[in-house]
Amino acid sequence: MVKEVILKSDKIPRFEGDGFGLDNCSINNQAIASEWQGQINHSEDASDTSQENTPGCVCLKFDDLKCFEVVERQYEAWGVIFQNSLAIQPSNPAFPAHTGLTVLMGSPKSGLLEVSFLRPINWVSALVTSSQRLVLTAYDRDRKLVAQTALPGSNLANSDSPIPPNTLLSIAANDIHYVTFSAFDGQFTVDNFRFCF
Image (cartoon, rainbow, N blue to C red; front, side, top):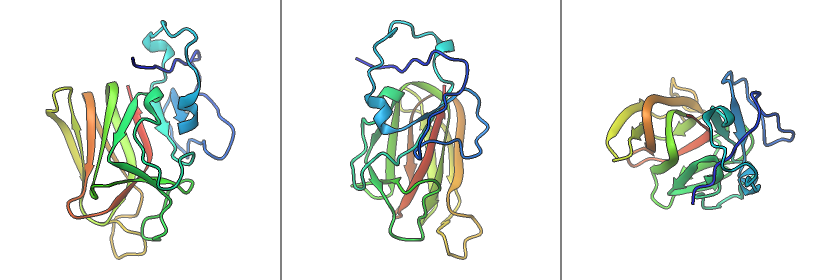
């Protein structure tokens, strides 16, 4: 059974506390989500699943996760499941977090992080820092390639890279069901993961 979050408002929800913020984002109708919000009982009016009542975009903040916590279904209530993902607070200054302290990295298989969506989306983005070329690939329900974009090379902090750390990678396409982040023989971090329906 799939749980769905229903927000009864036309306005962007405003949440108080350090774990939330738009960080100068101009996306309309966006919900800022953290892991603990996914634990809230959203059973009221669960039968009302009309598009106008759901947030257009969701931005995941990872600061409620514990360091070295395996990340899989913590955000399932928001419509997303991670695979091969670990929450970390980077001790290496080459991988700075953009907001807060916690980011995601691919683990136990290094250089790979997979995300599946419980309903199709049409836009996904994240701030990434990588030791190698990093490819963001989107797939449809049948795991056929829909779109792909790449960070052309390393963008570690305090390096001679012309690309700054926490560079935005995004894909816009219809019917995205899965995305992968992959860096062959490399390490990378993901922060401010966003997706839109």
